[in-house]
Length: 460
Ligand code: BGP
Image (cartoon, rainbow, N blue to C red):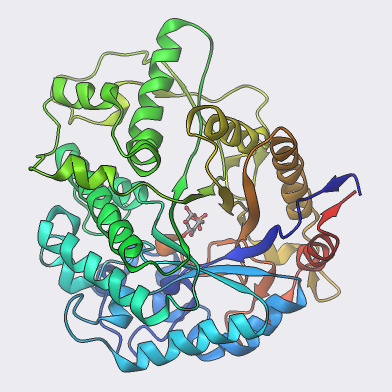
């Protein structure tokens, strides 16, 4: 086998509670920000499709886990819905949710699919948002209690925990760029939410470690590398600031237990630094992860700004850079994102050289395709483009591992085409095609190919 992966390599895919369960108003679940936002602004969602129409995993988890098995999964990541488990965010635990998550986790284990469980994938309970979401320190405490409840309930069987999925995204979407509720545009508040998310993360890690459950805890970060247009000093500076704001703002505290000095100074200079309280630095230092999940879809290419910032413009990360379209870049035309496979290797190399080579895995990588039905032939999606996409990324991943990177798995986003926030079902990513009318699942060509890769633990 030309590309052979290490023994016990994890092959699988990822999804999240809100994006797959459906049953948003069933089983005693409380409202989360997505349920609420849809009620008030349905037009913000592609074709006005809400999370209630997510792909029925709540009802069909058992047969879905069989489908995972059919395509060779030995692992699967999903999340627990905080508002399903604790409908008000704090207090009473919902017994129906405990029952569902127990059955789902047990079924995964019985089928030989290792559960990777994330505690927060963009879905803040509405009751917690009403208290200020992560702007409020009370909510941090509630999150830590929720995390501990999960460890107590499921930690005897779940050995791979993740505190957050892409924690920078709710900051960007909810507090800077208006694509998540609560649609605030305010850098200082965004910085506070980011900072408090790290405090919440650290609290969960400390509580987990104190319980000595013999598992590992990490965080999932979208480590989109920032590539400068050129080696010109001004372009390098632009890329460095991007890296500080979008990557190192979470990577450094999670792995090293402290913020980069450069980032602190930059925020201080522009009067955007969040309020630190006594004990915060010690808390962050105690939140170092055992392992890291890496989400990687596309690179971020930037250059020095071409124009001065308007004197009335709101303070934004874009004060320091312009986006750059590299001539000749390879595109996924069906999603409008660049494809740059080497990015995965660059991330691994950076972790190896600058972050102690901690254990990590690719927790999301994938290719969204709008209008994928046009690739149906003989009843099956012929997604050769997705096979190529995965293969080319795996080759770079393999090279990273050969050079010593500590990578233990690869998960595709996603298992069955799922509902994706305000994009709803616009972009399809799954190994299985979902028929939105009948909820039927049909394996795509990539699913069959992946089954072979997983069985052979590699490919030629
Ligand atoms: C990632 C998120 C997923 C997801 C995916 C696809 O950033 O972790 O939750 O939905 O992106 O996004 P989209 O459907 O917008 O292409």
